[in-house]
Length: 352
Image (cartoon, rainbow, N blue to C red; front, side, top):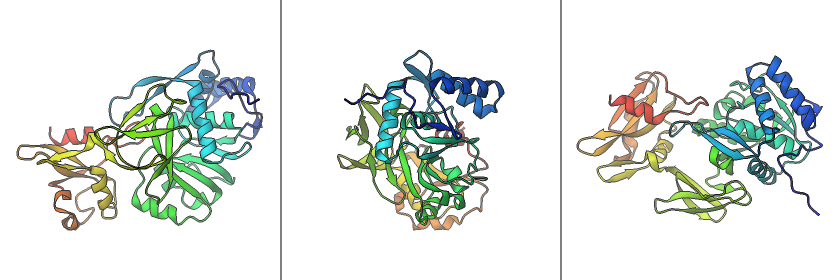
């Protein structure tokens, strides 16, 4: 008889910073973290106390990448189901060594903690800085990071067996660097708060995402991805992401329907144009649409930095419709709390 794993469980192989801890131990540690810890440790303590209270749900804050951040109520059992699916997909085993280096305020950080005590990982936590492996001397089986952390940890990744990267799209230069690693499996993940982090992943350099267990994918009339995942969501999740479905287990991400630029009747997907520009511009950038009397919307390029940071004549090598009508330079991009570029706000500021 198989016993269901529930949110009340703590795996008997679970360790936190080298110590075996059960449910009661975790609650005691949480009080100490809240009372005596640094800010990031207080966040860990707050989450653990929320997790082990009497409620069957927890409140999660969305990132605010495409709109105003909001609080959503998430069943703890669904978070457990997500953790189990991640364990299956990445072949994680009890006792595997993991590193927690993400902010606990958002779903990615919360889920690293849930995975650890549900799957029985031996997890260490460090401050969620941009250089989480700076003083590391430990070999890790499983680590989750955002692209900036990965960029600053390239030399230290030799000590990481499996790395998942999410939260923002990684640059082409970073992809090239990661593909050269011999001892580290690096995966780009696809997901959002509503899907309890990732529902798909792909090795860096591969074209298509592969879905996790118990997920069914389809599309609507706008070619946007629909996710049916009864173990993590009671309702189908209709995304804003335009995809190409390869088969029942794989899809390619093409772009977001809410960033598509309709320029003179031609629909342009910014993410695909950005792919073509990725090797030409040495700083962060994006393309988008702003109002235009003749075209309805015109395609513009927004570059982080000062004019002269790249050779604008290189843009002439793009297809006619992919060439931006104007280029704007922005000293520093507006970001959400977890580092995602606020495209809509930046574009809006250009026409005020």
